[in-house]
Length: 148
Image (cartoon, rainbow, N blue to C red; front, side, top):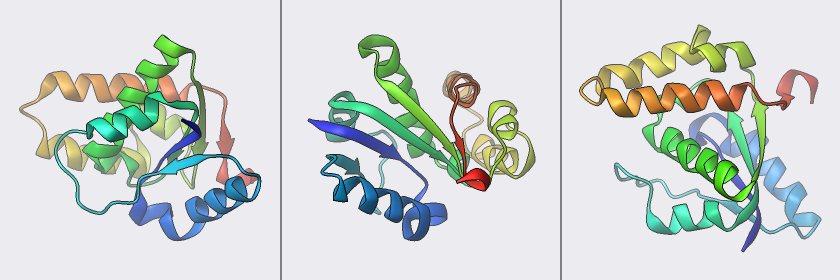
C-alpha cells in the first residue's frame, strides 16, 4: 500500500522536479511509488496497475513531453478510473506547461501529443480515451511549476 503514486515523464522531470518531490515525501515518511524502469511495453504492467490502485493519492506531473508517452497516458487512464472507483485523490502538477495546453492538447504539449497521435492513428478508441482523460485531469485544481 502506498500513500502516493507519481506519474511523470522521466526525460522531462526525473532528475529535477520528480526527484526533489520524491525526496521531500520520503523525508516525511510518506510511502511513495515512482516507476523509474526504462524498459516499457505497450500496456501498463499488472504490478504498476496494482500500485496505482493501492495508492491513496496520485500526483500527475504534466510536462512538455508527457503526452508523447503512451505509457504515461495509459497510467493516467488507470489513475482516473481509480479516482472514480475508489475516490482516489488526484493532484495535477503542471511542470512548465499551461493547464489549458494540457486540457486542449495545444502548444508544446499538443505538439508532443500530435507525435504520439501519428504513431497511434490506427487506434482511434485509445486516442479518444487519452484526449478525454487529459481534458478531465487538466480541469482539476492543481499546482503550476511557475508558482512553486
